[in-house]
Image 1 (cartoon, protein in one colour):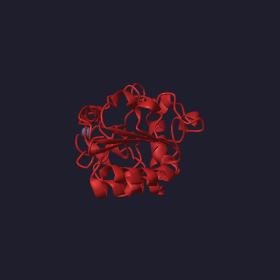
Image 2 (cartoon, rainbow, N blue to C red):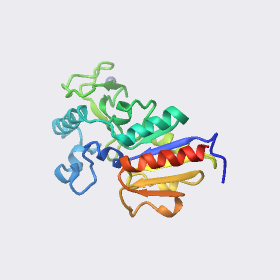
Image 3 (cartoon, rainbow, N blue to C red):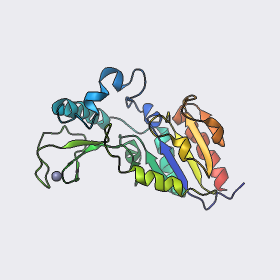
Length: 235
Ligand SMILES: [Zn+2]
């Protein structure tokens, strides 16, 4: 068994960690995509033709996010950050890690609380407000896009994801929480390190056999146990 004392802790999360905070997911059978066509609200090829619909959808999500609170799972990740330091990569566009106090969260798929100008690439923080269709404050472009990665759109943070996972060492700990593995096939990226999985249940795209430790239960229930496990590994 390697000595994990000096290794890194990498946390990779998906919708499952925020579900208990009441954030509606896209992919569940009763999720947002059951009610909204992803091809009209989340498609880089036609978002400009559905401009008002797209913004009205994300305005609503942003407004909903304002009252949502981090759950015990987010808070325990913050505790791991405080005690050991972590690399925190999430597929989530909510800001519940930030609300829990986490710093430097890598949002692979963008963030709900900002807009992006596709002409000059600047990011405009908007918080929980609805977009009022004002032009880009930097270059004057008339249209701004939600800062959320759409289908067929480049996801520049993936480069960071690959760098982080390519640099995992035997004495690192990798924690995968609340992801079906359908968007980012995380198992392909996992090679070295001590691997911990937490999902509500088995997922066809996640090979549980590659993990050293598996927790099938709610993130808020699993995280206290995982926290203890990591503490033991860290000695
Ligand atoms: Zn601009």
